[in-house]
Amino acid sequence: MARPKPQVSPPAHRAEFVTSATEITQFPPPLGLEVIMMGRSNCGKSSLINRWLGRKGLAKTSSTPGRTRLLNFFSVTWTPSSDPMTVVDLPGYGYAAAPKAMVKSWQNMIGDYLSAARPNRLGFLLLDVRRSAQKEEKDLARWLTDLNIPFQVVATKADKLSLSRVKAALSALAQQLGGFAHPLAFSALNGQGREHLIALVKARQELIQPSDSELAPPSDPTPEPTLDPTPDQAD
Ligand SMILES: Nc1nc2c(ncn2[C@@H]2O[C@H](COP(=O)(O)OP(=O)(O)O)[C@@H](O)[C@H]2O)c(=O)[nH]1
Ligand SMILES: [Mg+2]
Image 1 (cartoon, rainbow, N blue to C red):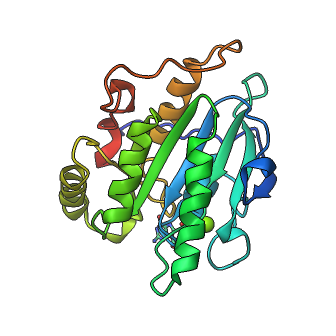
Image 2 (image 1 turned 180 degrees about the horizontal axis):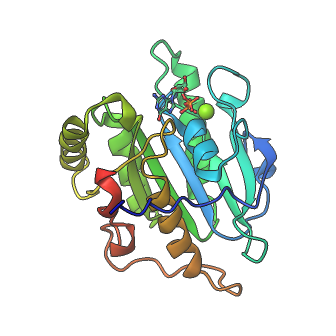
């Protein structure tokens, strides 16, 4: 008997670019759950957003440069009846030959955004599955923990390695990032990990009440169990 096909979630009902910003005065007011995509340049942030939401070309990928040094805000509604949420594509870091001033400006921009009083955030810290976590990723993970922003580590471009090498890379990443275990494997090419990403965001969104001005910070700074992404590692 044929095995049932895994369920594939439809694209987001609505997904629109809202604005680009470089500083706090330009950020749009917080609206619903705010999902943050962060990682070095070229690690696959824009591709993940497009695949996750089912919108080719919504976030500009590196073949169409332009918005990559800004914070880009998107407004997303999954179904006609669900609450809107915000997706923020943060500027990439790690340009090989970036001048010091640019690194500083990146740090300030990200620092201002992360420490802004914006409730109900959920971070995704992306790394190319073929790379190990560097100081930047470790710093970001620590930053997010200190700010009580829950986050999920995502190993992108999983289609580039065999399943066994992906598994080895995930364990290595979990070790390198200390307590921030259970990275999720994702591929914008074949959709691996998309269902899990959708489920993580949905679970987090369900925790938000419309009246919530602030999610209660976790009493323990380790990632919460709802962020454990073990299920679809092997798809
Ligand atoms: N094979 C493969 N290539 C990817 C994947 N995600 C991104 N890329 C490629 O990696 C490059 C950088 O992707 P982009 O989304 O622009 O990265 P960003 O700078 O982090 O936003 C582009 O050429 C993408 O086509 C993936 O899952 N699989
Ligand atoms: Mg990008």
